[in-house]
Length: 232
Image (tube, rainbow, N blue to C red; front, top):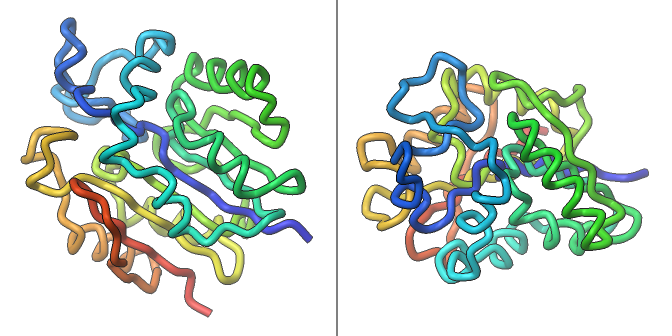
């Protein structure tokens, strides 16, 4: 039987994303409630434009995507859903990790991002990757449908995170985990410091949703990783 991973990396903010939007100069809004503060909004409809930011090779140095995926301990045959996948920065690595018998879901709130990921998967030959649109306030997954959830550079955008955590917990199978990767207060990347969350805040929000929580060791220069595990 296939195992499933939900990876929520959707807005995967690359270095300079906030500075490289001269029209708006704001942070990416994903996945968040539609009534989020206007200061955190701008258009992400132009996927071709944003792939230059989200998929900038320079991002690898501080995002360390290989290390992040390794921390998830993905096994062949699992299904990885990248929730808030944006242009699909993590999809190729997840596709390789789950193998030919696995499945990767690239989830995002933007129609054009979903279309971009679909085209990208086809061009790259990622036959085990599927892109889907999801609502702002829910991961859009069936109960007990996935085994892992990775949320990269996105958690600070979600409103009512305790309630959202509970929905993530419901989507996980036994032994499933959520991996939240987000910016430290000192990071030169990411949203303005006042919009950032500490690892302790994220831990509390995951506990509110019913998770057993651990801040794990990592080698990311500007971020932390908080893991929420489904209780046995």
